Image (tube, rainbow, N blue to C red; front, side):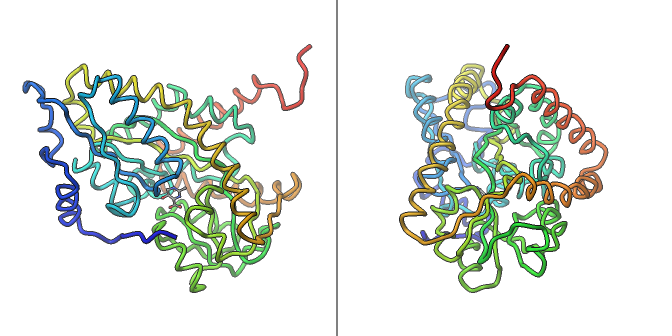
Length: 363
Ligand code: 6CS
């Protein structure tokens, strides 16, 4: 597994960003202010919560290529993979204060700052159908629900990116909620991410992504949850003996920018960014499907890890045990969170009613 740095102070991060060759001002608002004529090329910094080769990295490379082409080379994107700057929460901090222009911000961590977004950590809320989830995540209706909560944190929500089903790893199969009892499970940083596993009787241990491998290796924790591609590239399968496929939730991330910076962008730069985001959005679905499938093969080739797929009956037990967590979410995210949860449920129900079940033939 690659060495990752975390726990860096914002000042050190700023110095690193400047040393990394970002010769433009670290305060993004002044990069291309309202009345100034920008001096091209302009460099935008894009910070990732994942390492090179990941879903986020592939997405960032696509965005970079597209915007560089759409803008005729006027915009250049500098990508900072995980480990080069800081933890997820530190990246959010840097995006909020403007040291990075673009960043990935995953709800499991981000809910610490924007509680409403914790809705994506709830188990068995989105559909079992990836097509339904795909339509919902790409919809303007969903974006509309979250614009304000992000904006209040000086973040501009640019899109949601699905990264695949969460898969549980541990040193035993996790086939019933009772199997979680007594286990210490690593969760992402927010309180709501921890609640999901408390509901199964586990002890949550919130930690940054970079700490998970060593915590598993040193047996400070017993298990964790992540999509297959991440389990492979972070090496978690090397220190766990079972992967349980329960499809509790999709790992959903969001792409954000500093809002003050975005609002001050010249119109043509805004359009280039929006066009590039539109072009990249459908690719993210293909990339995550391809990476999650191919990395499972890599894991199987390189280990004797056991894979366990839960039956619908077994999944139902987890679904039932997870339902009280929705109340905990409302307690944390308040009235606006409750409205978001309700609307998301309606969106899933409506979309499922319109989508034929797999194998169904149209009459
Ligand atoms: O578990 C985590 O913390 C991380 N997992 C993924 C797949 N992406 C970023 C996130 O920080």
